[in-house]
Amino acid sequence: IRRRKISVIGAGFTGSTTALMLAQKELGDIVLVDIPKVEGPTKGKALDMFEASPVQGFDANIVGTSNYEDTKDSDLVIITAGVARKPGMSRDDLVNINAGVIRSVTEQVVKYSPDCIILVLTNPVDAMTYEAYRTSGFPKNRVIGQSGVLDTARFRSFVAEELNISVEDVTGFVLGGHGDDMVPLVRYSYAGGIPLEKLIPADRLEAIVNRTRKGGGEIVNLLGNGSAYYAPAASLVQMAEAILKDKKRILPAVAYLEGEYGYRDLYLGVPTILGGNGLEKVIELELTEDEKKALDKSAESVRNVMKVLQ
Ligand code: APR
Image 1 (cartoon, protein in one colour):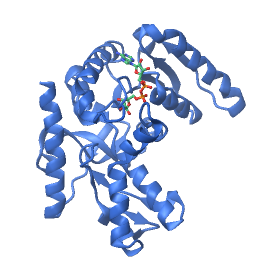
Image 2: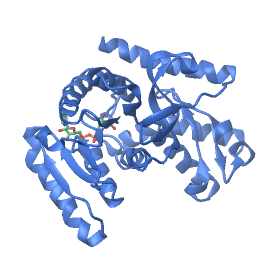
Image 3: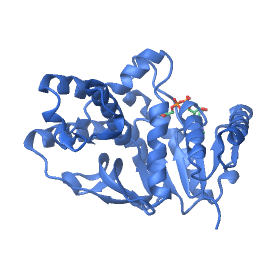
Image 4: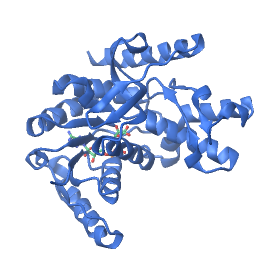
């Protein structure tokens, strides 16, 4: 029996926060990777985290590196490398810079961990996950993107605040690309098993949905420099835990579609089952006409980003 090995590529705000949260949950040993130019700071962050472990009482080796040999035989690789969104910049502006990063990172990852599962966070995430899929040559169940866990986390936070109830009792549901036209499905969202529509007036609920859609931008504007990282890191860790513990959780994920929801050869946010084999199943639901129209629009904007790439 050996401890799981998790590599986190990109040791910036999100990557290092993710590494710490993974370690705190004792999900495995952690290798934090960044470019040679920042190898010192990367090693420093990893060592600093390791030194927090006796105080917090978790056992995990955490090392920093710029050498992909150190990632050899990882079970899970989380990619956060890239450039973060600046105020006034859309996620789509990032596309070409980050696609190049994803390609070079994925080549290295695959070389040393041909059997790993890859989890992508880098934005625009739907297109970047596709890029990792294409570069890796992995089967679709082993290349997964994060967006819906974060989007629903934002939705759940706002609902809990509105109702003054525990965040734990609120569930949310979101479909589509990780962009301003994501599709939060209110009729599948509950508080303590009670449909939200019975607890919150329609106009308030609509305001919450709109705030959720623009949730990334709200943080970007407040930070002034960079984009959200605590909630994105927490979201990655929840997906990682579902996979590493083979929990078979129903979580929204960016999945490769081959006909599901009427789309083909596209990565898009949909409800899935995450377990030891990665993305084990896409759950298909019937949508109303309006929901399908909204999802089409979201899929279209993902395709437009993909066009920029080709
Ligand atoms: N290989 C490894 N690391 C890289 C590479 C590369 N080719 N290119 C850039 N990086 C590293 C940077 O050196 C930096 O340390 O990725 C890190 C990114 O960290 P931050 O700039 O702090 O960005 P962060 O806020 O963590 O966001 C990362 O996640 O939410 C998304 O949109 C966001 O795409 C962005 C990503």
